[in-house]
Length: 123
Ligand SMILES: [Zn+2]
Image (cartoon, rainbow, N blue to C red; front, side, top):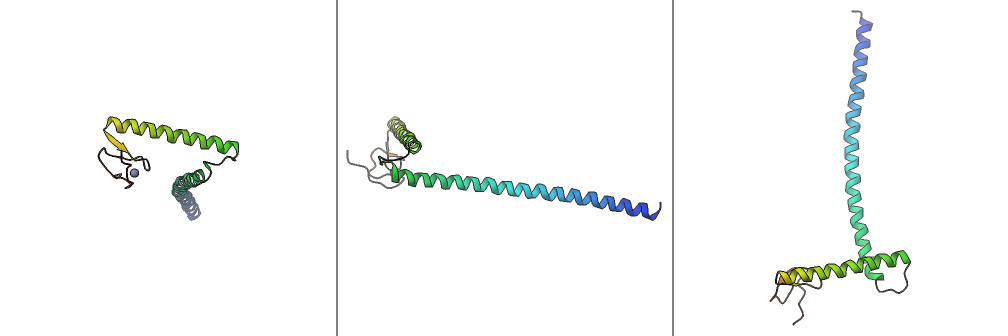
């Protein structure tokens, strides 16, 4: 075997190895980047939800709001109302009280919410 042929073969093998190593590095890098994108997206959605709650509390009683905002405020209010009704039904079935502040369930004779500590109105 002549030396040039051997050197060429060695060079090709090294190039193939470098390409394979770069692909592996790229795959690992993309996985890490995708994980960060997923993580940041989840955190951003949480921030959006929190921003939405702040905004909702500020504008829910306003007369003057854009139509698309009004529709969302009404959709949220309907869901709050229905969740409250359902929790009350569940609580009655389980013979418990529902906290008007946090919607948590407490024993029927409790004077304070066992979740948030809010006092229950005397019946
Ligand atoms: Zn509570």
